Structures are given as structure tokens and as C-alpha cells.
Length: 132
Image 1 (cartoon, rainbow, N blue to C red):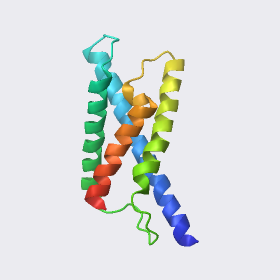
Image 2 (image 1 turned 90 degrees about the vertical axis):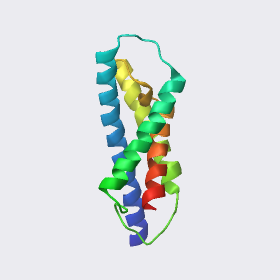
Image 3 (image 1 turned 90 degrees about the horizontal axis):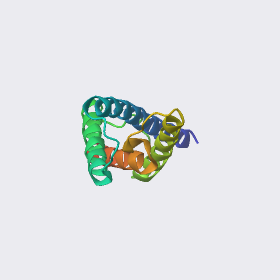
């Protein structure tokens, strides 16, 4: 039972870490877009590629800073974070984007379900590949 709770805690901490990185990335992107351009048009394909590369870079940085599992567990559910973390963080980013739009602020592509999920998936994939 303790092993299952440790695995669950590890999963929750992974999601929380990815979400915090995504919020920081969203705020930085929003600030840069506001400084560079006042255009309102979007290019979804360019945004998607940027989010995947940004997530991969965050995964490399995360693996470099923490080259081991954050919470070592004996119960191994290999690859669970590759599915569950993007779903949870995608939902959280969707809710963040919804809140930003309700406050009449312009949200970037990261503040959507697909944007958050693709960023989280590429980050989790790189981290899983490097850390295991």
C-alpha cells in the first residue's frame, strides 16, 4: 500500500512540476508576444512546432537539473506519465486559458488543451528517454 501511495505522490509531483513550467512558459511567451508584435493573427502549425520544441527543451533542462527520478518507487508503471501527465496538464492549461480570456487577456496557444498537452508530452517523453 505504501508503494502505491509513493507512486501516486510521484505522479502528482510530476504533473505539478510540468504545470508550473508551463505556466512560467505561458507568461514569458505572453510577455514576449506583447513586446514584439501587436498582431492578433495566429499560425497554429508554427505554434505547435514551437510548443513541441519548447517542451523538449524543458525536458532536457529538467533531466539535466534532476538526472534521476524525483521520487524513486518500487512499483513501476513505465510510461504512465507519457499519457496521464499530458492529459492532466492539458486540462489545467485549458482552464488557465479560459480564465485569461474571461479576464479579457490574450492567451497564447499554450493556454489550450492541445497546446498544454503537446508541451507536456514532449517534455515527459524527453525526460523519460533521458532519465528512464
